[in-house]
Length: 67
Image (cartoon, rainbow, N blue to C red):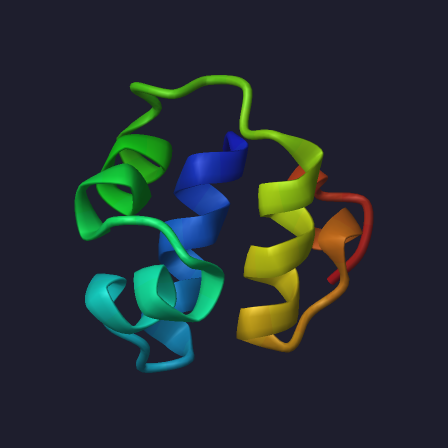
């Protein structure tokens, strides 16, 4: 599972819409969808950190090293 797929899975588990996540991290909804679909393969570390904060998880969860 790549970063985008994990992002989507965790976002849905937390009951957060793509719109809400986008607003929390300061990007557009379409950017969130592009991350989740893998259209943007290399998600910048700054974005990973913001998403992790918004989802209340550790950034390492995105690469599968923590649960």
